[in-house]
Length: 322
Image (cartoon, rainbow, N blue to C red; front, side):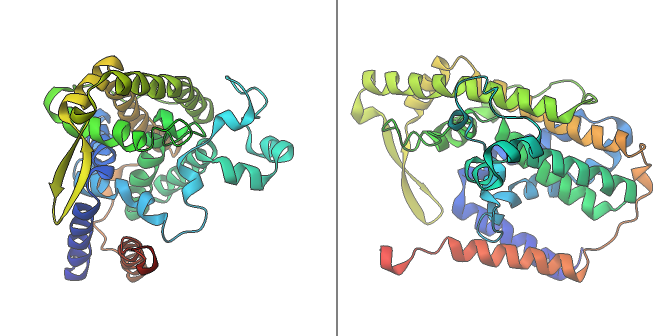
């Protein structure tokens, strides 16, 4: 690893500490997915597990640098009617013809974007391009994980329509950060070949949509019954102090959800590993053990630097809003 690249990795670590809990689950999912792979793939992914884990959060950082990046993380299915949303074609061209590309961009494109990413990863394996394989694997892990989050499948994505603002980070970040390493089991088995990635992801997204009402209704009920002065606390992370849900409230919510967060996290791990494995199989199962240890190109290093700088600038509060 070059000295310049080492500096870039350190910057990633420093900036992540500033943002904190939004990255925890994504890194864990990519990390544990590596251990579901067969030995022929494990030889590459295990040796690069830190890269796969750390760069699982790159897509969130690109929200501040790449136009249209945000729409790739979700789909507001309830805009298109009632479950199971049969009015929304599953094929991209048919959906564009019926609702227009602008509408699809506005209400999210995650199921279609994952399929595009899967095609790109398959091509990277065919090319035996180590850096592309690693970068695309880290990225697609993020999008697949997002598709497993119930609030990524509804217009009421942060409880803003039901006076529950903040519930998104509560479900997605606070619960796994508090419980994942202490209580949850991520020994899942082995990755499986996915014959139809599109159908697979639509099933997962429909599951997310079906669970979104439970996520919101359970928290609403708990909030009404839980003592107000025991719901929030203030925690210091790094140089900042923020209001956070208490440990007691978090545990109570997780219990009422009957293991939903752990279950969806486990399903995410299985899906991520299975999509990596499927791309490799569809590429002809190339021998990745013989891929040369190439350094990042100057263009790739520049891309990382631009991503970090843009993300750091986005974290600086606008003076007019202070």
